[in-house]
Length: 222
Picture 1: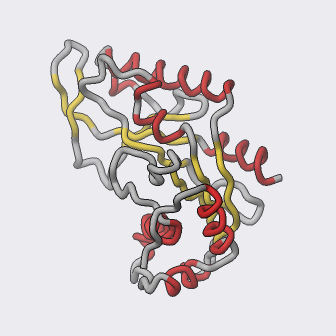
Picture 2 (picture 1 turned 120 degrees about the horizontal axis):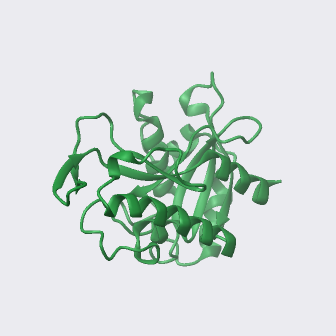
């Protein structure tokens, strides 16, 4: 059974300490949740399981996972040396009706201004249920981080607002990058074209680069 939303950071930290070191199968058993038959759903399942264990209440809304605490939850698979194994999805990126969208009122800022990173075991060869919670840390962007994040956002949205969304590559951005988001290339959404017309393109999402999450681990875990 899912936990109620934590009323304070102290309660959340108590819950975090309780699950740290536990295997996914142990957490699932405590919550009376069955492990998925297919590991292709594994990544999404772990996030949902941890939301239940900790009391995250936002579900799929475009607000932080813990609205009462203004806190977003992100799982971060790492190897035995605490090296991130992949970039971290933050949120979907609006591609239309963005004329008045700025970093400070963007979904990106809402989701990244206070983040709980939970490190999950990404060791190859382990059975899915045997992978465990390796640790956690809280992240609030420094003044320098915010400057860089705003520069990344402004550069990307200058291209979106001028109809150049299709020219955006994953190389743009120092902390975050914009990449196609979706299970395959068939899902399409509206965006602005070069002549101001509506075009159809793949949905995009903001991702935190692995190099930056590695830096955050260095700051917080070593």
